[in-house]
Amino acid sequence: MKLKPHPFFDTKENHKKLPYASIISKLSSINIDIKEYDYCHDFLSSYDGSNDTFNTYRREVDKLLQWCWIIKNISLKEINRKLLMEYIDFVKKPPKEWMNKGNVKRFINENINEHWKPFIKPATSSSLKSTLACLSSFFTFLAQEEFTNSNPVLLIRQKSKLFQKQQEIRTNRKISEFQWETIINEIKTLAEKNNKYFRTYFALSAFYLLGVRISELAKSPIHEPKMGNFFRDENGLWWFSTIGKGNKYREIAVPDDLLLVLKQYRKSLSLNPLPLKHEQTPLIVSETKSTNIGIRQLRTIITDAFNIAINKLNSENLSEEAMELEQATVHWLRHTSISNDIKHRPREHIRDDVGHSSPTTMDKYIDIDRNERHSSAKNKKLIN
Image (cartoon, rainbow, N blue to C red; front, side, top):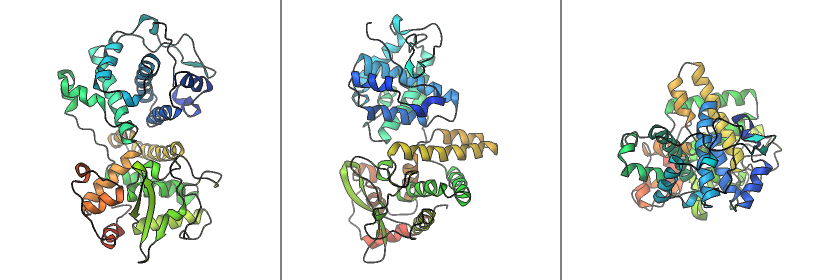
């Protein structure tokens, strides 16, 4: 095989420094969009709490990218069941020139180590199960981030007796009430001691109480949220306007608890208690307080909050709760928000607030009164 492998990720300690110039150059040479790389980087960022866990996911994602980007020269969006089966055959019998006898550093001073190879040995039945478990989490993340449409690993498991037992284990994609209380209470305590944490406190509260996607709170190519996205209508009711999936505009009913957090957050920024009409102040400000933060920065803020809660849970010998929370991504907050809403609010109210339009998602379409929708959201609590 003439094609040479190229590592795309470094150690956990150097992860935040990525991408190196050598990586950017490689992506450019194989016509891979840097945004696709960013999704992979953000996925691995979710596992930076444990060095062993990070290394496991890094190894499996990096191997997939070698095959996908370098050998097949395709986007992750293109991987379906057939192509994934082809990848499985590849890892069972990787080319000898892509194998090392032992572990070798991927980078030396941010430059590729020419002696690095992605494989030490071919995949076995046992290691293949671990590989597909990691890739399933990876593709689920990409689907939740709306980068891909499905998880091709699940299609393989449905056809294979080898993975039938794993298929029966349902992965919970939401945060438990106890985990949530730990997260929000820890960050609230930090905010009361240091104003800078009010930004995190507000972001967590907005995810939980509005059920928004990360692209609806952070700056993106189609939308840059401002404080003026919070507005009061002619009936004195507060709403949050956003541009969601499919470039669709919607207005979300704002609970009273979120207004209280918004006031605290704005006070920390020396602003008036509530936004003025059409106010152009960035919604979630950068450290310079001049621009709205991007998706990667917001994901880092939320992941850091999760890690603070994980450390708290571990300190109280609640290792099972901590281990479960280690798997969480930012998108889990949206799942958690919707799951909790369904217990208390009409589904058609939730449908309009979270921007679901598919009948298979929210079960039905019902035209409803705005005042009723706001009333059902008004008393949603930050802590139940």
